[in-house]
Image (cartoon, rainbow, N blue to C red):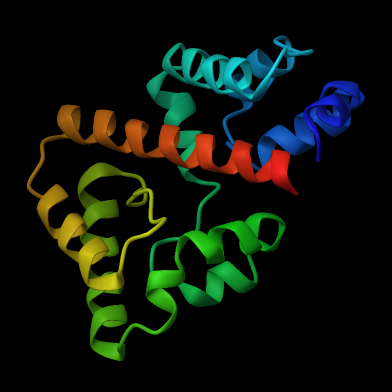
Length: 168
């Protein structure tokens, strides 16, 4: 979709398109007020600015719109609307061994039990062992540190998805 086409979308369709990039309702509402935007840089700057103005509750809402890293079944079924993008982002897990996928399942549970939300990482360009290592390291963080890291990872994912939206 071109930027011109994105700018011309009716509000409902614009919100739907934005929701594929970030699932936080407050962010979507803030972003829809930014349109029309001048260029891709303006779009990305608005996305970052509006993401940083969201609350922790909003960030956690966005996290619920992602499959767990390594959960290939959820990629195919529960997250069908963004599954193609998420699958591309998590391509490093597709050929992961059973041992790695089992370690993800265990690590994801430990993470969710500790922090109350799923492990969020910008998976683009990362291998399964690399993401598993990141998960293991981040389990050592306290809640205050981790929510800021997860928020930053979601910001990266959103920027990548906005660029994909414009190239679709």
